[in-house]
Each structure stands twice: as structure tokens, then as C-alpha cells.
Length: 287
Image 1 (spheres, one colour):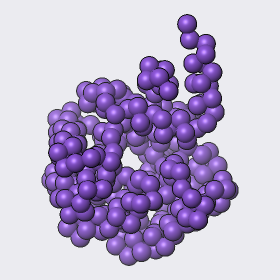
Image 2 (image 1 turned 90 degrees about the vertical axis):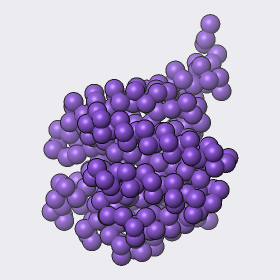
Image 3 (image 1 turned 60 degrees about the vertical axis):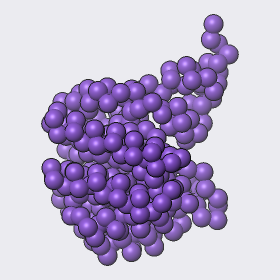
Image 4 (image 1 turned 30 degrees about the vertical axis):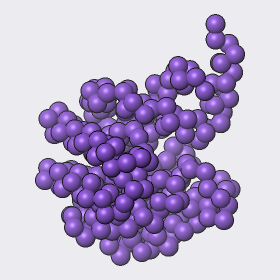
């Protein structure tokens, strides 16, 4: 798809190509009582040099969070830090970022990518948890993966900090639920498994049904507001975002930026075929 056309779709969901654009957007969100997590777009680097450059850009994000006094944390893709190159190398890379955030009482979220990296990412998270404080680093669990309940039961033993999402990568039916209701059911099963043991959870969804069911679980377990937050992507379901804020709950918006916006945007299009169809129609209406 033409980059120019994709950008017309994408600019709603991406802060821009520069860190300063992300900072300005986060300030606007903070002024509305909304938290943020900043993500430097990019993944699956080809060599250590690229991975080091990605780490250095992420480190600049931390500096900006501190200098600008942003109510935000950092999210990173593990393959962006070199996980596809060498496990120990990636661990050292991510450790530098966690250590920097730990010193200023902030937080790093390790995103979850496609299934070849699920176990590697969880193992990376476990190593980091052994080294750093619980409040400094967290992991992501995807409810469309059939293995996730076993992963959560294991991670609960170390009092993991979670972001729970449905998952967007294309996976085989052998390892992933394909039915919408099965994914929803597993999401709620995982969420209850997390909160009943006192784990902190980022409830990441744009599904109004799941948000309403999450409210029920929050009430069922009389969950303290400091033990969870809702999370959404930038530019998606602002109506729900504002409702959650109005209801008195914390919400964190995922704010991506960077020159690698095209690949991220294509993933968003694949995730939402109706938007993709709209974009394709526009291809033929351009003058």
C-alpha cells in the first residue's frame, strides 16, 4: 500500500516520527487525567548495532519522561532490543533500561510479540524480575493463546505485573483460539486468575463487553484502584476512554512514535479489516 495513503490512516494512531511529538501528545493526555506509555516503533532488528541504537532511543524516552515530568512509562519490543539475535545480549540491553527506570521509580513494560518469542520473552521477564524490584518491569499476556492460562499460573508465583490483551499476531489454530467468544472467555478467565492473587493488571482492551465484565470482577474482588488500570491504543475508542476516566478509573494510552510507523500501521490495518477496506476504497478515489 502507498506510504502516503497509509499515513493518512495512521496519523490518528501514531504521535509522529519524533520523540518531541510524542512528548507533546503525552502532555495533552496528562492534562486530561490520562496516563501514557511511550513506545519507539520498531522490532526484529537485524544486528547488534541496530539493537543498541534502539536501546539508546528508548533511553532518550526515559530522559524526556524525567525532564518533562510526564505521567508515563516506557514500552519496548524484546526483538527490538536483540532477543532474536542473542538472549543474553537482549537481557543486558533491557537491564540497562530497567535499571535507569528503577532509579527514578518508573516502569518498563515488555511487549509480547508473535509465538516464536513467547517463551523467550517470559524467560527474559523472569530474569529481570530476579534482578529488579517488582514495580520496575512487567510482561504482557495474550488471551488468544491457548498456553496463556498455564503461563499466568506460573507467573503468579513471582507476583508478576501484567498487561492483558487479546493479541493481534496471526497464529495457527493449534496454538491460538480463533473464535471471538473463546478469546473473550479466556480473557476473563486470565483476568480473574491475575487479580484474585493480587497481581497488578493493565486491562488492555477496546472491547466494551470485556470492559463491562472487568468492572464486575473489580467489584466482585473489591479491587483497590491502585491494583489495576485500563489501557488502550492511541486514537481508538475515545468514547470508552473518556467513560472509564469519568467512572473514576485510571487509563493508560499506548503512544507509539518513530520512523518505523509503516510496519506498525499495516499491522493495525490487518487487525481491523473494515478500516483496511475503507483505505483500499480511497486508493481509487484519489485524484
